[in-house]
Image (tube, rainbow, N blue to C red; front, side):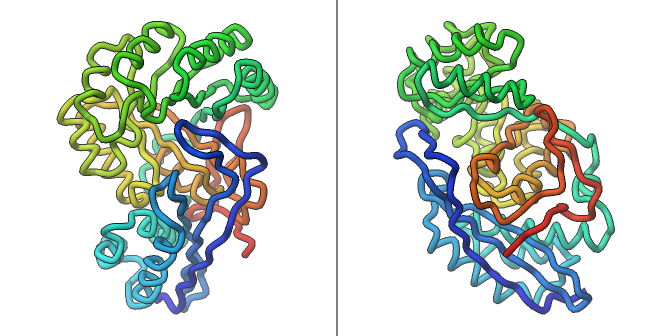
Length: 353
């Protein structure tokens, strides 16, 4: 198998409606960068990534430039020597993990196509489905409850509530959602918006209500996160504090959280995600496979990782549902809040570009 062409296609993706997150301006669109690899044997594989300064920390032009540099090199790489190919691209992406993610996905997709196996089976095939949360953005109490009811009607049973701006309001919103949906699983994501004292006050107020509290304190302050983790009655997950293998190792070594959230676009793709998950597994920390606001193709890759590893206890793969013009359509099935794998070889998708 030989790669004959590598194409990079940026796409501006619009959201159905603006989404508000802690300490960020409303998000109305994101830039997705798709990569297509074509082989002499007539196979075509896709990968993609997200470039958004507030979500991933990278400007679209920066990620696009690195992807174009990788595309020029990709035609000289053997697509089935995956570790070698990604090692060759890694120096170009040393300061830009989202770019490596796009090519990591495409090379893994090619491997699945060559093997004739869906990627989740090729990676381990621990299960073929996982339950996902759906996100309730920052909103009023009334709006949050209404969204929860709408999502419940669509079959979702796990809500991840965004917070971190007004802790008292966050507690009120969670309690109101619990009253409206008493048998549902609730998670709170503060996106680093709390102080240590506030995080503990929220955790104590919601003890017995929350499944976990995600990234309660600032991402770059592991000591504070560790203090909260050791005193909180609610499980704590590290998200932005563990965006790659090196930072995940620090979280594990300091016992700074009960679990680690991994996102393919921020850590560098499937290969990097497996490194993060291996660190979490060795440290006996739970793993949650999560996402940004991203196309279904990228969600399919995250799902493959989540289904392959027995250490993944939580799924949070709903980022494609808010997009209005996603050119990708993954083969997985979303049924009553469960993501069910496709048996199509590779990532399993269609892309209309």
